[in-house]
Length: 268
Image (cartoon, rainbow, N blue to C red; front, side, top):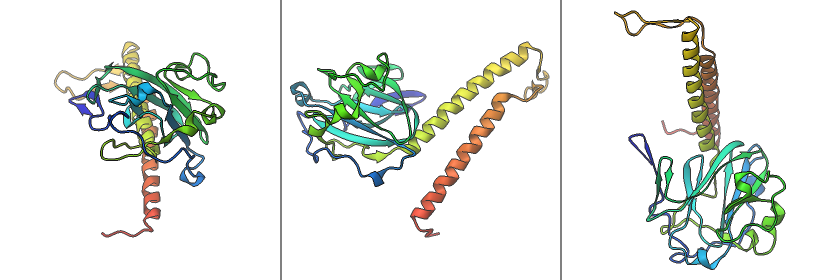
């Protein structure tokens, strides 16, 4: 939630813990292969049982690319289909639903970037008391998700007894709604576009400063403040134009797919 440029992290009405609302979904099972295509990836999140977690009043929140999706309670699992690339994963512990403002967090459990590859399945284990007994060979030992309370574990480790196979599905209901067990590919693609655009705009400012130092920038006349500018084309502008064209094509493809799914029937 953003207010006047201020990002407020909160999960009010979604953060109820297992002490008040135990998980009651079905036993663990992988999603059907038809539920996702191999151009994307699947993230499984699971939380193993502990008495500490079972007595929890509020459950921690899980964010992907700075967007809240669910609060993970004791002895539960859920999943998200995501777009390949760098996915930023964060967990925050709420206090009466409030979690932080901008870079300040009341309790930041994890904040890391995971390089997601197409066609892969990732298992993210959360336990605030014990760490996995085996390291994930696919991650460097100094990776933020190879240590701490939230870790990416191997499939073999996740599937062993007393791990993900013993958890239950994190339902979404009135007492603890969530937005998991879905594809968030479009949201990821939008986040990638906005992040890349912000980077290019910063590159543009640096490029303008360089051209001005080199004398390749014409200042505006005193009587016409809207004139002036670089005397050569900006590389950043070309990159921004290409990025916007690619994003426009992506939106057209989304519209095409939506039209196909609706069989081309429109009420207008």
